[in-house]
Length: 214
Image 1 (cartoon, rainbow, N blue to C red):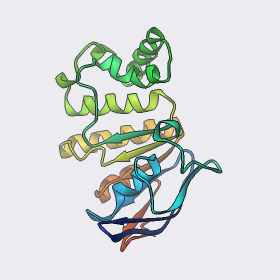
Image 2 (cartoon, helix red, strand yellow):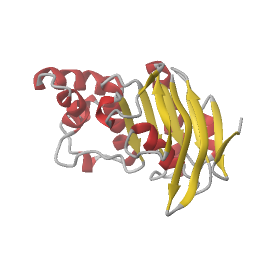
Image 3 (cartoon, rainbow, N blue to C red):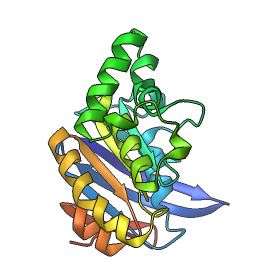
Image 4 (cartoon, helix red, strand yellow):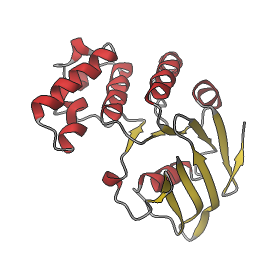
């Protein structure tokens, strides 16, 4: 279980988050809603370890991980711009996390090809990522996120760069694959329909605090 406990954060000397508490269970997808500037991405970055809170702590499975560096938390992040490496082909993009974990390159590439096959992307393995469609790029990004077996998945507006029809097509697919992986997932989105399509429950950031949405 991923837990954020009593998180406070200031931005430009003004309170942005105040006494925020959130729990995300293993296998649960929780949507974090709120208007632009409400602190959604800031809270996600605090969970990831990319940003420090002014007060509060981050826990996972009963352990305080607040002081752990992002790469030691075992979390995977996905952003709206896909963040794929343009100098690598599809197979090596997906294998990247395994190579960073010091797995032999040949083994990492073999596992990458297996993951791409699961996603129906094996025929694209040698293609450069700039030659992919937006939907293909986002599927590659998810495959890369899941291949390392992360303890939690953090999604920041993952579909906002895609057109409306493609967003709808990917929501069900992503929900199915994420739930099958059984990890705690926090989805930041401003899109109520996206939240309803993907999440088990939703919370909303309003006036610096979290309130239940549904």
